[in-house]
Length: 312
Image 1 (cartoon, rainbow, N blue to C red):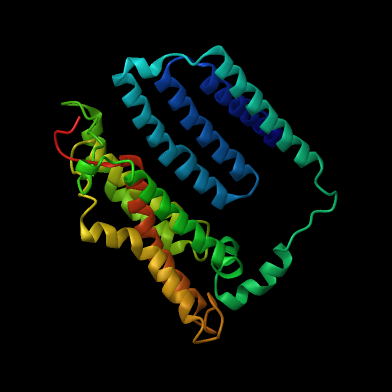
Image 2 (cartoon, rainbow, N blue to C red):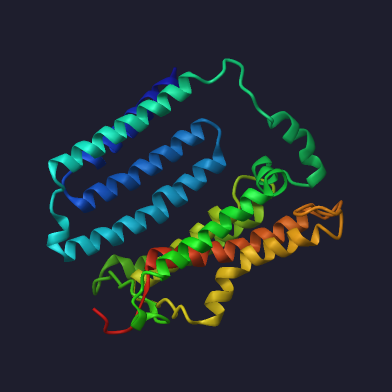
């Protein structure tokens, strides 16, 4: 009975936070409610037993996406013309589109077969051969490793897309994310106390992801959040995008993933196949490399395109 009451309250809070983030007029309030909405969704995923999805939702849905929206809200606040209410026709079109998508998703759920079709049983039977304890890691790096590789390449392409928005005269400069800290404010204090624990936790999530919920994406997101926090507090700055070490960090994960995948042609003879007994060590190496690239790429996505000092 207690669990039922908790689930009902959680669903009510999720719906309330979602509605509030849509209906509220103040941009920053809407962003804060969106972040709260993502955290509540994380709790919902925990209740469903999907711990990895919950960690990803908290890190990406609330963390990185929340930072992007906060940065966008800050720019809107500096430009009153950009904060004008959209036309009624645009709002109606958005509402109709949202209702249509929600209705379609609901219909798909109702049309699911009564007997679920799943390969989870076969995946769990083959998991001991990989040496991994986390079935999610096994699926991502063994059974659908090619998809996972493409996902990391997409992140890299997304960063290149953001960088391409820079003006020609700004190319090679550093991202123009400005500090938000006020003299005597709480943000510098938070930036001096939180990163040691955050960095340790991010590394742990990556290292332990082969056996328990966690992994490169979750760990990299936590590391990215710590870097962004330091920049927003004015304690450090992003390097120029022309920096060779920065570009190497961005490319390390996909390159290591691809090299290990190509080595599979030598033994056992297939792309992204692992030699017998070496699957787990190679996957851990890929996860560590991917964590570095993901942390840097996500941080730079939030920071935006490069700009020269003094540029408007």
